[in-house]
Amino acid sequence: MKLKLDLHDIFNKGSDIDRALRGIIDEAVQKKATLVEIIPGKGSGALKKKVLRFLDQKEIKQLYHRVEKDGDNWGRLFVHFRFNESTGRRGRGR
Image (cartoon, rainbow, N blue to C red; front, side, top):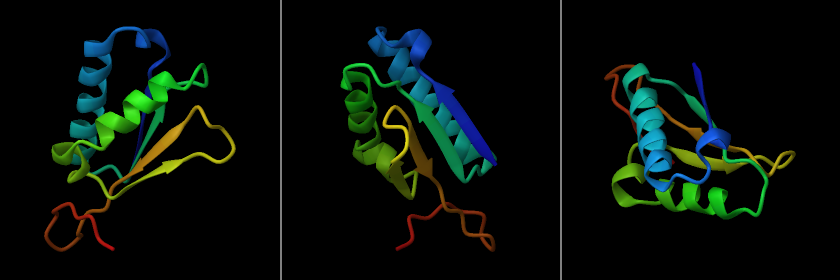
């Protein structure tokens, strides 16, 4: 399952951005989604940096497996999740 979050509409509303990011991460964990696509857009890169800082927070970082920056479109990020099929629990795995 893949979820998608486009931040174009709320690019200048800091608290809304954090709320939207937290919401999509929580939804991915709840629905056991394996991938979240986040679109901060290209622009100056400030929003992408804000998203990466959000994802790097300790309490958020423990919820997902890894972050991938799209090599073809630098205005897009992928957050990968890994869940243990036998226990149903998330895991960072190595």
